[in-house]
Length: 479
Ligand code: NAD
Image (cartoon, rainbow, N blue to C red):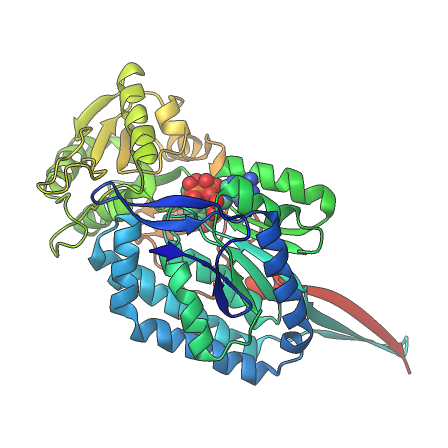
């Protein structure tokens, strides 16, 4: 099977005539070929988007909204097909793709289909000066959206939906590691009546297709989600071109657990926040810090619970952890487990590959819990992005906060306590864009989403996303 580009409403072969292998992580086999687009393909996609822009940007809000809501419906109607495609392409459990990834992709279109009907610009009456100012919020033109492999359709649509809702036309590239559901989105958009050229989906590697999008002189904004190193590179290219940039990057999120927490709820959610999607969610809590008096108890109970998690075929109903996304990624995660041992960490559970009968070449790894004794060790400082979590004790609130903040990242943090004053103190002091208290990955799509420090630039979600995808122009009239 060939994963083709979707340009101007048609599936087309890449001009580059180059292809990449697409692997099924659950068995390590190549099961399709991905177009590896080059700058000529991006130019073709750009031309289609540019031609569609004048009409789309003048299409009424109601009409745009109706089309977005239709796309949302069609994603929901195709839930089984899309969830199966996602599980096969990414290695994640089918149960997770069916309950989280695909419903959220549908929700993204529904949310922005509705949000655009409520988005308004401001006016300022300058009393005494006889002037009125009103601020236009106009679409940017052709914008580029680039997304990663961990939540493929979920994050791809999180960018595309606000971009087109705001009247832009789009050249979008999913990760070359998980292109399948983005490929399938093309036919859904056609069926929903999205005009040709409004959304163009191009496939290919970062250095080839991604770089060509970022470098294109007339693609006016880049909304990127991916690794911090890639984000740095994109910023270096797009910055001097004065493109609008939204960067959602890596994380190394702390999970602070105090002795007064609701213990059972905390334990259950901490297992989930450590290992959901094989730990491959930018928001996973990868550093667990526990208040000293309950440290030994948690360590024991947590490991007991982790032992019960089943690593298995993504298509089995009782699988908790599926396969990691690729062989390279599996090897990277394993290298951190080896490093942990060299750095003096103690593997409390896991650390080994798992062989699944009939799927011996799949990329399976045990959920791994590492006790660390020094917050500055690399395993506690660098993003591993796999089923690996560290645990260590703290004595005081100040120490907990200091350790939580002493990494270069600042995406999210989770706090387990029933003390309101402490909740407010820590939430104020913690360096992260998102703080969850007594919960994790609890999302209201209206809220600002994004990170500080090396976790990114700007916020997605709600009106923040619609603001990003529009340019403000103030008009001052004297009467
Ligand atoms: P990645 O940076 O390797 O790739 C992300 C995307 O960028 C892919 O589509 C890739 O092809 C493209 N790309 C690579 N080089 C490029 C270049 N030179 N120019 C343009 N595009 C290029 O990231 P990944 O491995 O796919 O994803 C994992 C990372 O994403 C982790 O660091 C994770 O924390 C992060 N992430 C962040 C968030 C968030 O919301 N902050 C969400 C999910 C994942």
